[in-house]
Amino acid sequence: QVQLVESGGDLVQAGGSLTLSCAASGSILNINVMGWYRQAPGKQRELVAAVSSGGTTAYADSVKGRFTISRDNAKNSVYLRMNSLKREDTAVYYCNAATPEMSWRGQGTQVTVSS
Image (cartoon, rainbow, N blue to C red; front, side, top):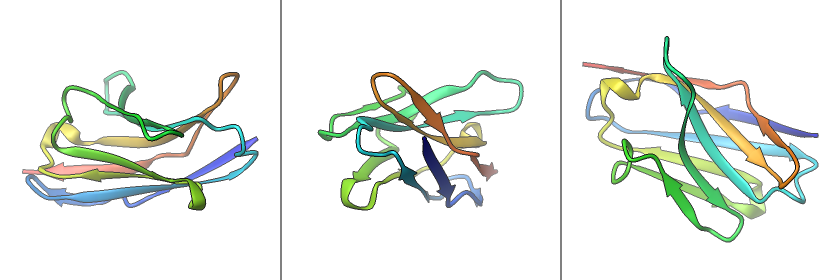
């Protein structure tokens, strides 16, 4: 079992920046991919960014060039630096961790971008 705790969500003005953090604990030895999903009201959950244990990253087209995902394996943590935030980035952001067999998701942290 893996526990994920997110932090860093906040209310921010459009054009501003935020950094989300996620700390993993529990059975973390076999985690290979960590990432962030988001879900806005009335919309499906979507993958925002992901990073492998080797450092390979992937981003949704909507956040490329604005968001940066990073991972600290020593701290079992993953971060999402969000710059140039837009109103459409408003959502609950969920941390995700996965092994080839299973995946886990945190409780989520709210990001609200005001105009």
